[in-house]
Image (cartoon, rainbow, N blue to C red; front, top):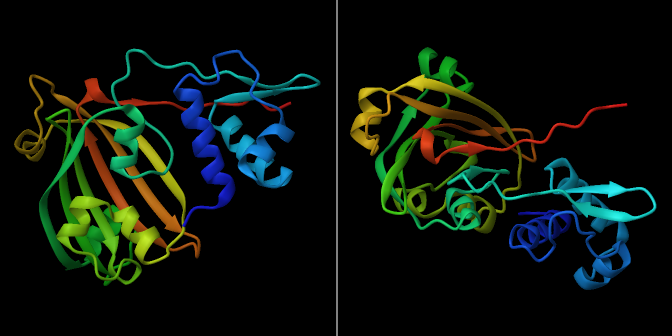
Length: 239
C-alpha cells in the first residue's frame, strides 16, 4: 500500500516525463499543488523531496522548484524506482508481457541461502520468468520469495503482477530495495530464455526487497539484454 506523498510523487514524475512541465521550467507553487492534490503542505514537501532525490527537480532559493529532468532519447528500457515490471513497461511506453518459465517451492539449502540472503531452512518460492518487450524476450528474471511473506502465491499471480497481489490483496507495504548492477557473461540458460542475437554479455540487476516490517521478502536476479537496458541515478554533492 503506497503512501499519499508517494502517489503524488509518481503523478508529478509522470507529468514531467510527459512534458507537461518542461525542462528548466518552474513547476506550480507549493500552495497551488497542495490545493490541486488536496493534501497538506507537509505531504507535498515529502513528494517534492522524492522528486529531488530522483533527479527530476531542484529547489531554487527564492524562485521555486525547477525541472531538471530530460528524456534519454537513446534509452529503451530505463530502470527506475521500486516498481513492478508492468509499471516500468508502462512508464517506458513499451508493450510488455510475461511468461512463467518455472514455479516451485523449495527449502533453502546453504548454497541458496548464500546466494539470496535468506536463511538456511527458509521455505521459498523459486520462480523464473521471461519478460517480453515489444514482442522480444529481453529480460530473464530469477526470483526467490519468502513463502511466509507472500502466502498464496501462484503461477497465475506471478504471470500477472506479484506487487499488485502484495499491495492490493495482502496489504503489504513495499518500502526498500537494495540494488546492485553488474555485467556477466551470457549463460546457456540466458541463451535458452532470451533473444540475445550475438551479444555475449548481459546486464544483471540484483534486488533485495523489504516490507515495512524490515523483512526481506524477495531476492531477484534480472538478466537484461544490454541494448534494452539503462539505469539512471542522481548524485548530490554535500556541502
